[in-house]
Length: 316
Image (tube, rainbow, N blue to C red; front, side, top):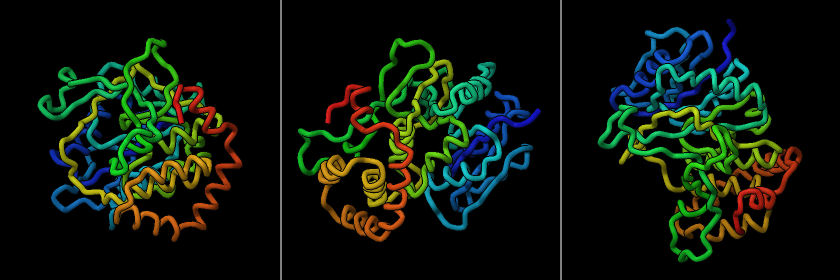
């Protein structure tokens, strides 16, 4: 039986052996004949470095310097050898006897231009990793471009941000604006066609970037509510991401896939602090690559951003 899915799991300083436990849970709940796993350790401190020798079919890559979760995801997508890919965080849990992997494979093969996510079950905090005690269910996301009424000192997270949605009564699988929840599956060739998460730095904006590109290139973003996956939502991250990279990713998205007038409006909403200055300096330094990517996206996009807004009732 040939493998059908490559599961990509970046990890960095994950406490409680969570990366190992996530892999173990996958092997306990899915047919190992159907998947390979690529774990990318993004230069964890020595006490958090794990091995996965207990499992066949796991490739472990250790980065000698930190490159960020989105570059790790991109690396995994480029290394994948199967027709389908699944991108996960390293603190997840799957239900046994739920047929989750087969459902994902069937979706990818049935709709090769669709980007999917699952329902996200809130774990961590006081419930631990027990799926039966999940503290909430989350159903993909809407997109907030910017809040016109917000003050000038608004937080950057209120600009180009996904916002959790409530469940819609549209059957088991239905269209959503933005995938969210750290369980994303799609055809590998579609990921490559969209240039995946190429050039994003560290962490931030990946779901918005990939979802918008997929829609603008004629694809569809969907949630499969028949697949529920536990995700450990934490009070504090085990690593730090500099705010300038959060700004940079938003600016990169604006400069590569959004129309000029909207890009100017959104960038004008970002706080004009030292992080903004550093982000814009990096944008200027990477202008040649940004222009190249923008030209590529213009060549593959068949829809406009206004089509996206009209489809999902978003006002600009």
